[in-house]
Length: 257
Image (cartoon, rainbow, N blue to C red; front, side):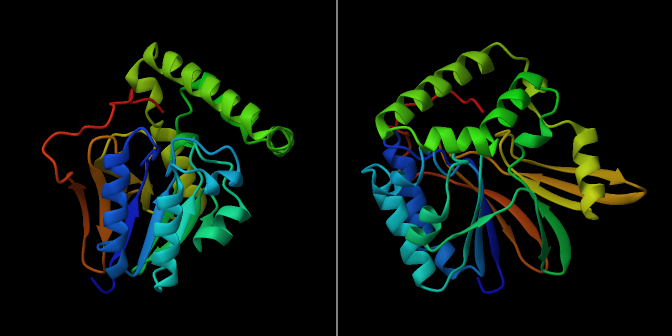
């Protein structure tokens, strides 16, 4: 697939879901190796306590798989998600991947395209936006990373439980992106194309922005199968990567942001 660029998001990899981790590692060994570049637009991991996580047993195969891919010459770019925003230089050094700013404007086969995780577009979810501002604050992150690993793990577990309970009580439309926020950020960066994840609602959205055709592509999550967007000079193709086994044996985690 020379000239093909791949985009994925919301894998939420963790030890509780080994089949999805296996699917991802197979994807790295075959599909991604033949691509021009791989972009991971947030939530590669279910959680990330800091770059000490590269040594955690459940993440070692993923870290090793990424390193093998980048060492083989395929560039990998990773954007922070709302679950793994504490990835830093240690992650980059160990995997060979490069961290991306959110948002990032990319010349994608001649078309200016904006890449985002997508959570910052969910402006109707005011509770989440307040939480996001707190944990993205450099002072908060410095304080958190200064805590012992065991304490950080406990705090993350608490956050995940709070998130599940909060999501269960919210209307679905509140947790989706706000169209005005979409148009505003696309206008700000001078693009008619946007690719993002986060909402777990894979779909292509066509609309008009300032009198011109615009396109927003939403990547799917990897809870029960893979989701990948393949882009080349001629087309965009959003597809699923089913597991080899008919039935997913992993514990089904609640689909929350």
